[in-house]
Amino acid sequence: MQNVFYKEQRQRDLNQNPVSILANATIGMRDKARQILDVFWTPFDIRFSNILDRLSKHEKLLELEWTISEADINLIHANLWERELESIQIKQKAMAGELETLKMNTMCKCEHLFMLMFAADL
Image 1 (cartoon, rainbow, N blue to C red):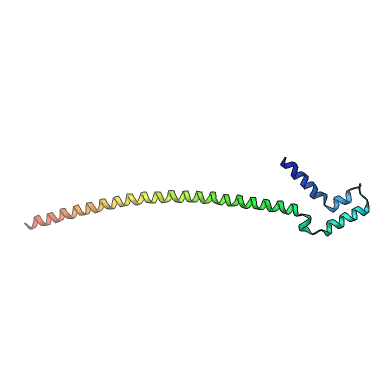
Image 2 (cartoon, rainbow, N blue to C red):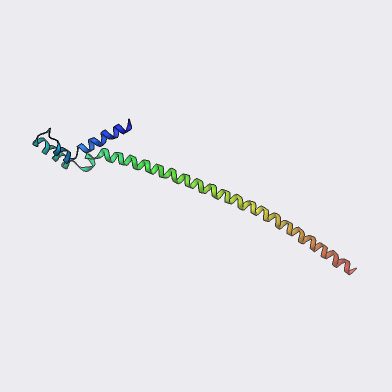
């Protein structure tokens, strides 16, 4: 149904072309001259307002699709950054655990050394 509408619309646009007026054998020279004058005299934005309206609609659709695509890309990047942040947090927790283990080992060694030094003094 939609294709039929666009075909009819395109045909109307093409029928306003001066060449199609001259090629039409069913109308007289005076009518042809009047139609050609009308084609050239009518301002562009009025003559082709239907085409300009369709172009405007298509432009809005493209902008909407572009916005949706950008949102999808941003969502993908946000998910990647979220995974990277989780990975960093896991590594950070593991390093904190290793640091705590090193502190405990160091304290144990210090206590052991202190006890050895204290026992040597006795």
